[in-house]
Length: 208
Length: 208
Image 1 (cartoon, rainbow over the protein chains, first blue to last red):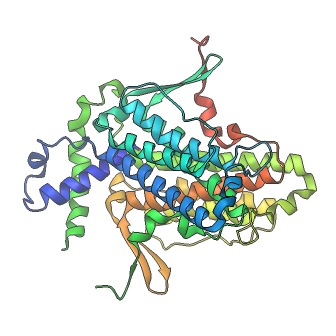
Image 2: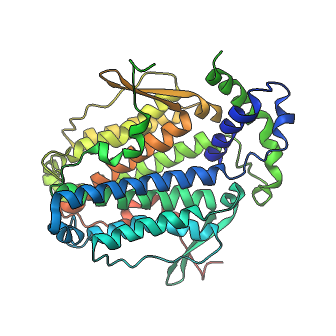
Image 3: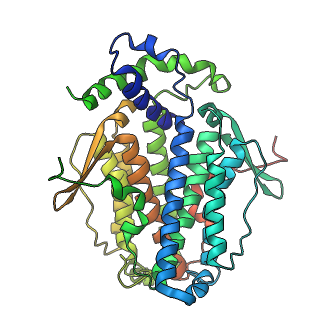
């Protein structure tokens, strides 16, 4: 993610600062640290927009199931898998712990028992809020993150690998499993609802 | 030349010339320059390691279900969702089309009907092979990718957004849904099997 986010930085700097000047690119670039904040901003955007999607899915579930939405919270793909409510909490835990790590605070997972839709929405909004408090440079992604799994087991890896190899697979895993549980429960949603963040980018060739 | 064309030119200059300026930040990583060429390589690694995981999951499915593995290929989460075999093909389509884009070739999706485990494995290995043929610099990720959806609908976005906002959500969506179908079918697997790429990173504190 590190290098990728940097490309993102470069592109905005190019657009904002370099295009009008168009000369001596290195010099114009020098005062701006291209590692600054864009990667982190990119991650904030990825997490935040997907949490918006989850909020959208909860809205559809509520309007479709009405009072039966409570039973959705306890639905699961397999008897020994985690129920829908917990999938929402675990989805939130990834951006949550990412934000806490950026803030140099300890990991802190949400209560896995999500008893109501209001509680699920509360998790989404508290996570969104926490994401907005991140205020570090992209250099944070080169620092080492340690994850403890108990029983003496741990992983130490650079921040960008923490994001790519731990947070993102977990984030999409729990978000997709929440979606799959909703589909299994008969909610009339489709791939477009999962890809809500992408929909605003779609154009029609007749647009000028 | 439009703004985007200029962006393209500048971006490769930026990537090639300015990256060494960041070295103070990456001092902890001194032997490896994390900015240099890591992005494409990083994506190859992400895709490739997760495809290895899918191969592992197919092995477990085959040894568990034996001849019944055929029916797994047709299993789905909901009647109007795609079956397991298609989820495998669609998972592969993401790194496949990424590689084709890097190679400046047109999109080309796999046959969604996957009739046997051998065919599923063939898709994994042909995708792995295609990934190894990518031979572009990270500047490719600043170039514009166009995705056509038919009926005049399309998206144009920079390569890094193509990866973050289209390929990765789709990749993990189909991989997770394949996993969820296996769980629903009773395969004795767990989160660890989904996170196989991560397992080698786990250490024990008694290790020196």
